[in-house]
Amino acid sequence: MINKSLKELIESREFISMASCDLEFRPNAAPKFLLKVEGDYLYLVDYIIGRTFTNLQVNPRASLSFIDSNTLIGYQINGRVEIVDSGLEYKEILKELQLKQIDLSIARVIEGVTKGKAHKSFELAILEQFVIFKVKMEEVVEMRPSGTLKRERV
Image 1 (cartoon, one colour):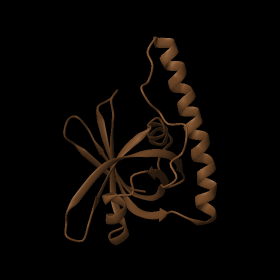
Image 2 (cartoon, one colour):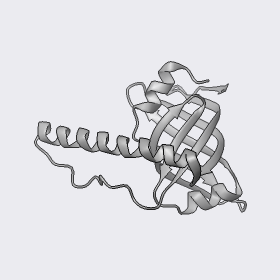
Image 3 (cartoon, helix red, strand yellow):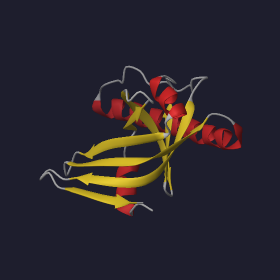
Image 4 (cartoon, helix red, strand yellow):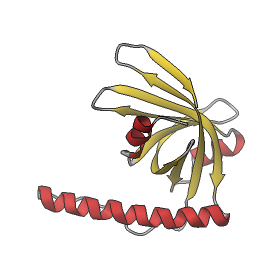
């Protein structure tokens, strides 16, 4: 299980970069919407259903990355991905996604009014087609500005 401070850092993000690779070793990296962190799992939303989805169907391993801009410590999370695109878990996640999108939309409107600027677009409606990537965190790599790495199995 990841520690509380790392969980909070992850939860403060809206998007995380996800890297995948097909069986011919062609890499792909793309930002994914972060829905939630639950235990050793990260739930990411993919609206595009493109190369990442195709790669994960044949090679269910992925690497996620982000940086803490306050400390300049980078993080890499490696793990196995399950594609959730139907069933009871999908329906439950859909409800959570709808609530999170509403919360984010409200926060953006308030921020825009407070700062006197509008956000050009942020969809309230959920697209009809999307999948959830349920990432089982297996390894966390901490990359310090000094160049040192700290690897930890989850």
